[in-house]
Image (cartoon, rainbow, N blue to C red; front, side):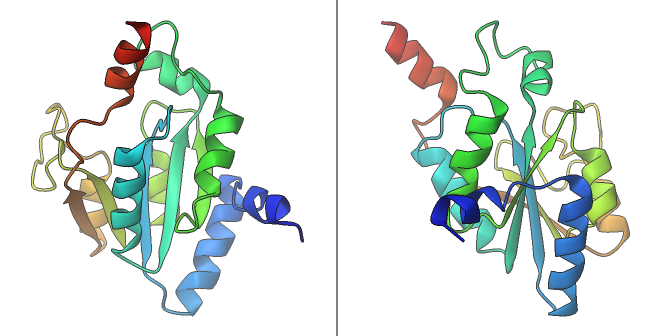
Amino acid sequence: MSRLESIKSKIVSLEDAQRRVNMWRLKSDKIVFTNGCFDLLHEGHVTYLAKAAEEGNRLVLALNTDASVKRQGKGVDRPINGESSRAIVLAALGFVDLVVLFDQDTPLEMIEFLKPDILVKGADYDPSERNPNSKKYIVGSDVVLDYGGEVKSIELVDGFSTTAILAKARK
């Protein structure tokens, strides 16, 4: 298998993700789950994902589809990079084990389906927040905690955001 084929093999359907997660569980691997748009990959994203991967043995990344990104209201020009482009760049990271696209507004269905051991988000979210209407609430945290999983937040790297990069590029 070529290196490019190896990278592409990490981009899978939800059903294929479940099969792989089940295989990893047979080996007692701890499954970490995170999600996001990851539009213009930057140091903040890479640092966050590397730290997320360190929380367990396998990192599953749920990636918003283009339509899902547009519904988030990030701007008429977003995403800058299409979903297939974003997926392949993320899959090229050695510490990302799977990339699964999702078209819903949240990854809740995917979390319920895959049942990760650890759910991770950036520190702009609060693992102890239980109000689903709060901006700090981590979608799926109640589900993960109900079956005995963990919910964690990871510090973000100051000065890095796709919005800031785009603003700088426009100047």
